Amino acid sequence: MSERLRIDRLHDGPFRALNALLREVRRSTRQAGLDRAVAELLCLRVSQLNGCGACIRVHTDFALRAGVPQDRLDLLAGWREEQAFSAQERAALEIAEATVLAVPAGEGPDVPGVGLDEESYARLSGFFTEAQFSALLWNAVLISAYNRMTLFSGRE
Image (cartoon, rainbow, N blue to C red; front, side, top):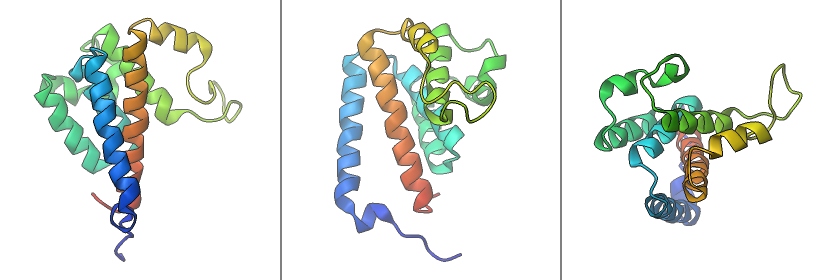
């Protein structure tokens, strides 16, 4: 396989801006009082769904450092069937899936459409303060951007 274009090196300005955004999102997450473990579970799930091995490794390590036990990380892909996650963690994981798996309405059976439908949005936002909910959404958006940059650059 030929070497892929390293977009982070060729255009380092956008990459530096992405890293600056990361610092700002982390700051906003802390200021919102969002539990770091909840945020890392969301980031790890987003990375799993996007298939980014490099980011899965990073966020597994971050989740462990945030206090998430390994046995719960082992269950993450099947979180809907497991009772090992708190209601707030489950809400964050549902947000992770909604941000990654959203497709235009009508593209398939039972597809809610882009993002969260009004009912899901209202239900999920009830688990967090407004600032925490916003921080979770920013984390999901940002990690998806890193996942794609990493995957498209062949950085596994």
